Length: 244
Length: 372
Image 1: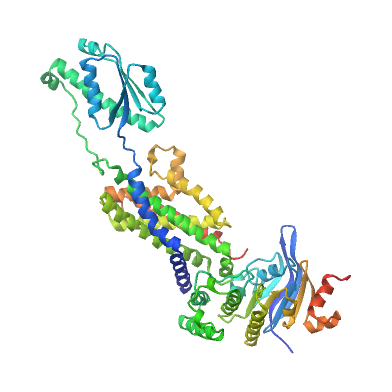
Image 2: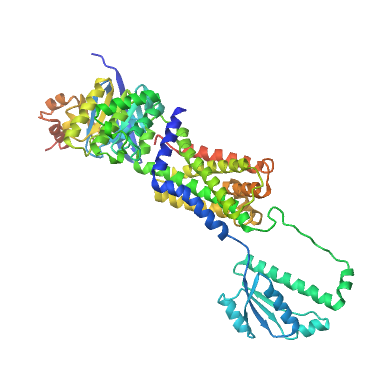
């Protein structure tokens, strides 16, 4: 089975002064896959994700995303990706519809098509009555679902999610992952960072980062077999505390 | 290009949804105009006099009467003690002490020069010089009178002398409001544009929404221009409000072309907005921006020539004003409104503002980084 590579990272290093946030990362992500990036806080997940999405330039190494070099063509990458970050980033003083219209417009989607997709999206999320409400009036779970929908509104090749379910209740997390699956089903590659280990089980492949390095990378099943563990959580504990 | 319209639309919605902004944008020009234009004046009235008349003759009384008759002076105190007079000056109870020594009337009667002593509070040098100028005017008249009385007015008229007729051009009544209003109009637009545009961008940094914009393919200049356009429009509306207030409440004359005034204000605004946005790329919090904005606004305003004539500033200050957009708009506003200057008369100012506007905007676009 040959799969198209959409993200290819070779020897990525990112330094902030003398601190090395990403230490020689190398990995590939295939088209349509859900790729999980795990690690404790400060392991370097967000730094790597920001480099992949063109928000931050790598110190050295080769990073190719959607066919473009992250160091030389970050703006080309941005045309082909969606992004949803840890810190909630829709405009709180705009309504749901206004946010959708704005981001749709930024990605160059035709006005009529934005309207069409807005209707579809609101129906699908059972959001109809929220269309003209300000984002600041929405509960967090709804906001996160909406932010994800906006991030994939332009049907990007890849969507980057940085701890998308932080602070969200289990039921909404469940629904959120259904949305991720649906997007992956449409061929959108999903690159997601998380520190919820149960979520890692939903990924096709996961990589575990520790202190700026990738210490494990495989499917959840293979990793469990390799570390003789019942869950990814156990794998993670064994990697993080090798002695114990 | 369509992207930019979506961004501009977003800015307008956000500005007018913010209750404080909506009020400030239209309330500030009204209050500033009504408050500053009549309050900021260099006119001198009611200079408080203290008289030490040791002569007590018809001649000395005549001089004092003349001073009392003028609108500039108010004789507040009369004393024989020099110490008391100095004390009054010291305590700020009077601005000027006039001493007429005894023998003043006798000497002038004999044909010798009469001597008087004037002490002026010169903490404010301009005020002191003006008070002295008014006083010496009154004394000159009185002098002429003495001469005329002694040699007969017919004989005086036969002496060769210069008769001066003067006219004050462009502001015949020397109405300070006419001078200040075009200047205040400039300050108003400067403050509103500078602060609101800069705060707006820093707010996006604080809330993290700028990150979401940076990860989209939005072009840098699209983003900066979209931040400028709403405040350009609001600034020009404020100019219009200011002009209407000027006409209705102060009956300010408007000699030149309104379109030319708006052209000047528009270029000025672009320059100011460009600079504010440039500055905002250095600030990560709204407090930081407010502090730096305050620093620059004070410099721009005080060096603009709104209160003090540019020509009397030191050369280095005049050189600095080559890049101070406020200095150009002060001249444009005053020349167009009071003189009726045409495009040709102010072309140097207009072209300079165009260059400054382009440079400041380019700096803002260049400093704004989508990739750290």
